[in-house]
Figure 1 (cartoon, rainbow, N blue to C red):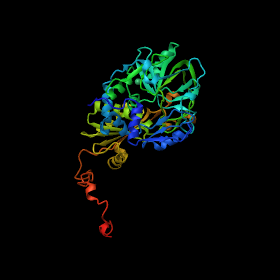
Figure 2: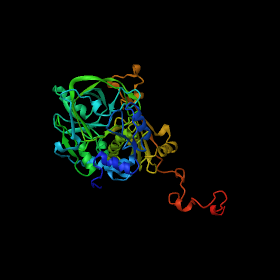
Figure 3: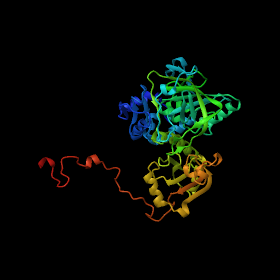
Figure 4: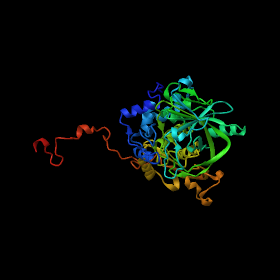
Length: 484
Ligand SMILES: [Mn+2]
């Protein structure tokens, strides 16, 4: 597998590439940071990245949607779309340690705003949008939160939603994963946890942050492997965290021990809001950035958000399934299933009943999975119409359906809350729900043509440019136009 260095080492190189290929829309008109910016970016999502040159009262541009297509992400990796999951998995299996550069010379700290003496307001410095209708206010939605394990010093990278709570205060949602474990350790000792929030990184570094990796596995090493060379990192000005040196903007701060304050509501990936609750608090110590930095925002629940979550999960789930079922050939987390809940699995079945084993195996691979559909290898799992056709013609509910009641699922799935008073389950009941698996594979043996898929010989070989006369003939009369 190729590990040649990729050409797009930082965000601006990737944006120049998109601009050169008509995939970057420049919005010069002043737009409001409240809803208007997000509305425009949403309309362009999946077609063109949006670069806002006059957001709010700020001179700092905002970009969104620069990885809103699966093919674009494959392109950033330098592989074909069919190689995307294999390339990501190869990088996760072969991480490349980062390379520390002279922090004083790092692009991400060409300009330093020290918050420790007070008087600065993050909303004056950065163009932070308010996205959805009922959001509490401005949110940082594309910040890579980097912290070090207090026990081992190994870093972790995750994207967390970050609310602006005050001039130097942030609210943050921390799910019970690695950052949570680090902060628990620090807080138990009465210590703050140093963090850095990197905003405006290249697509591969952003994607790496979403890898489903073990504790004490620095996701920035996957970014290096995807780039084909070690990622340059620089030490923060006010703490020990190492951040991508090419980042546009870095917020340095501390998660405060024993402090909680209200965070939310915020429109999340399932296209519903999560509630306002007491959550962790970050105190800002510094904001550093490049000269002329670019602020990145992810429009919640749109393609950039869904793909960032889906692709690393697909790579992990494919590897997980192939360990037990080497005849599994591909997987896809559907966009309709918010890139998290619905998994399509393609396999070359060679024993009856295998698809049900695959269904059970998949549910063990990630608790977010709610529905698994298994299809044969003649069905394209990246095309939801093909998957529905397989269910329509190869599946019978009394024979091919697997239901597991009362399992753990996504806490953000609102249908898991209906049995609870006011739809508010206590934390230990959140995400409690059912799993559904559909075996939409055809039987291994069948009578002649019962399961033969209709095809027309030559359909894919025909050269339309050659056989269709674009001009010169009147389609109705067959008279050459030149003679009319
Ligand atoms: Mn991690």
